[in-house]
Length: 233
Image (cartoon, rainbow, N blue to C red):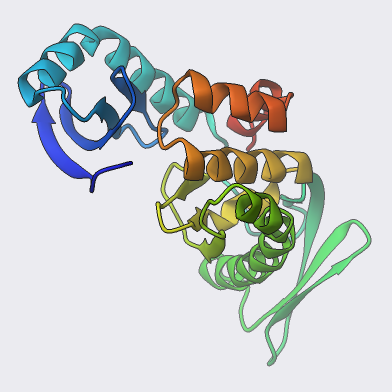
């Protein structure tokens, strides 16, 4: 059983707190720097705050690490010859001006037609294409999990594609799996890892031992795939 999440103020900042019948407090720092807590049902808020304060140095280090990864990313370019990823492969942009905007994947190129060569216009058309492709790729992969969830009495996962600043995905108790359209730039194995990770959260909302054991059984290479995602430009 999991209670409705609430937000509390801690020494490490505002945190999202959920309660379950787990035995220990789980503290997670997300890539966007936000803090998530999953606590036992009978643990007082004062005790939760005390334990967060005790882990404050670790929380600070995690946030710094995520911030450094973000700073190292190379800004994307939206000119002919610039490279962009799709399903882990690099493709070069070929831009032409025309009345009807659109994008076609052709060989090793992303052939894009725009009304002007302005970066904003190229970026808009490209991101619309990524979003459509993301919905198609994610839905196809999520379908594989519906029977698995049904057999275990878990909510049947449904997809929502949503831009998130520093997260690849998240899961809601009702079975909604939110995935960042940027994830479609990654290799298919990385996409499958993120989906497996979020599906595991339908059973275990925290990152405790049971969650980790389940993820390990479903995706043995999860640590390697996570590292690959973190290094993606």
